[in-house]
Image: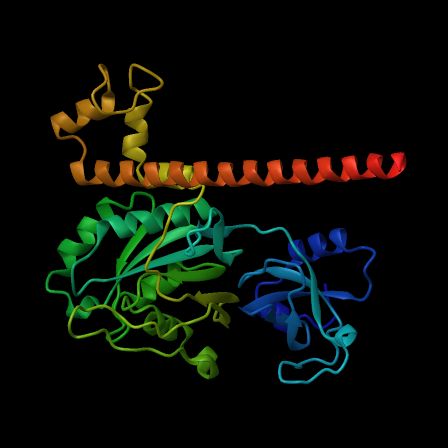
Length: 366
């Protein structure tokens, strides 16, 4: 562990990470550990033992929350410094293995996943309770959170403005088995003490614009990060939708040795290799599937289908089954696209290699 590790400890550095770092970089004496605070156009802000540096990301695909190895970090606090030599510029040389990562299908439509945050322990799924609560969106975000390996918590924000918060909370709790669901208000502090108590390690806040993510984050940060107060905005009066006030993902330390990541509003959250996360979000359906007569049952009209039977008896909710089927179809489609992309890349590599071999022997003959 670095001699002066106070700052790194605030960002979650511990003995286990120190051992991992030493094992991976035993032959790199000029390299030190750091954690990515923010990523921006090939560069990133990294917290190191003595301060914060502005570093080049190199060839690494970084995201907020990554633990990394950095070279040329002296002098410290060089976020605003101008370096004249590229060799003297702090540079990220490698990424430590991630304990978890929140991944969605790429917003660009490419057949690849987009990592929203790394090394997250708790995912807070926010939704405003003073309007229509989209249960399908909550299930989608729950699948994303469960798949990441983090622990999900559902926070119904703006509970002070909800007409019947008890009914909303009961409805959401029913679709979030295994996860904590809370009604909270940053304005009145209702439920904030309970929310604070269930948060652990690195906390990522997810949800659509207008859900009150930044307001909730500011309430959690409190006086410990007065200089890091996040910008907030009002929802549009016409449709109740929010504006994007958070435009980047930023890692901020707060009380109890924890860190918090406030993310931009998510308009689209596609499934990406989220099979296990979907199973954990719909455990009652997964249990029924294991009781189907045929192992390849499509759960539509096959004889002996336990899922269809439970639906006909009213044992499972039809809306919830539709949501499950939709996420499974989407996840399978994205997986197929990824397989097709990988196959195309392999085909291109084979063609390039074949041309090189032909050129080699052609040159020898000449």
